[in-house]
Length: 98
Image 1 (cartoon, rainbow, N blue to C red):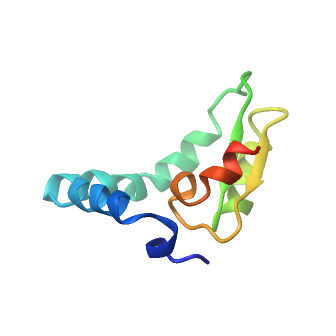
Image 2: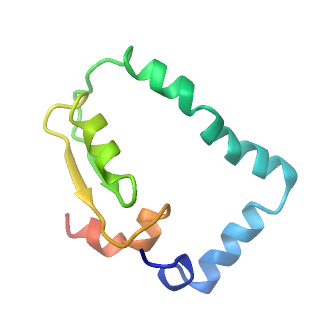
């Protein structure tokens, strides 16, 4: 996997560091992970999507593809190899070519 330090520039890392520098921002960002259990439960109640969907996954590609294959018919899922959690920042050129 590409290390974030080489995939994301110095300026962008500074923006992230500033955004996550307060206690409140850390609590909010942790909420994403705390909600996983509820998200899994809620997923079964979601309607099928009718719009075009593009999913981009790095380390969690298999799980993302499995989920997107269920709800939006015809969804396209791209495996962005050598990317981590910041897929858009790390592999923006790959996504633009998709």
